[in-house]
Amino acid sequence: MKIAYKLTNSKMRTYNGFQWELGKWYKTTGKGDLCSPGWLHFYSDPLIGLFLNPIHANIKNPRLFRAEVKGKGLDDNETKCGYSRARLIEELPVPQISPVQRVRFAIFYAKKMYKGKGWNKWADNWLSGKDRTEESAASAAYIARIALSGTKIAFYAIKSAASAVKSTMIAFYAAKSVVDVAESAFYATKNKKINLIRIARKAMEE
Image (cartoon, rainbow, N blue to C red):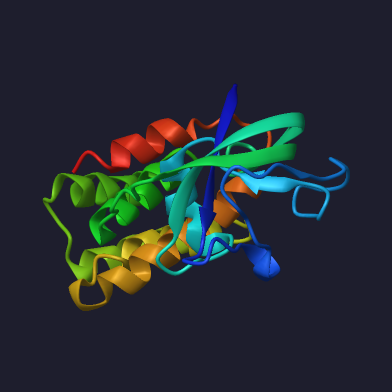
């Protein structure tokens, strides 16, 4: 049995109100781009789904299900996957992810793509807890913006992770960091293998 994971809203609905039922098989054509109606959309790991939820369906208080998947399959660099046949077989507890863990995920992700010394020094200090001040975050974001000017990952992936340290707005920026980093990362690393599951689990260690 091949397994994948699905997020739904409280009524077991997903994008455009598609209704799921536990145990019922669903089938699509398995044709077209992954974002098209030709695929049933899933994640390869529950944490990936929860970390990337803001950039995908952005479901409030999502429910998490284990699914059995069959037929044609298509993977989008581990950010999401699609299958032509699937059924939900079990509801699972939803792991709780803190704002700090979301920031860690964003930083670990960005570090895979950007090797600038100034920003990475700030990132290491933030991860260790040595320096999480707003001032140093702003400075690091500026350095990265200048260094990466003209590239898609540039400002948004780095600034969003850096801005998250502002304590009074950490929840907002933490979620925003996942959106920006994940979106930019796919294009910036389309031909580079990044182990998102490992990054997600590492982010949860704090």
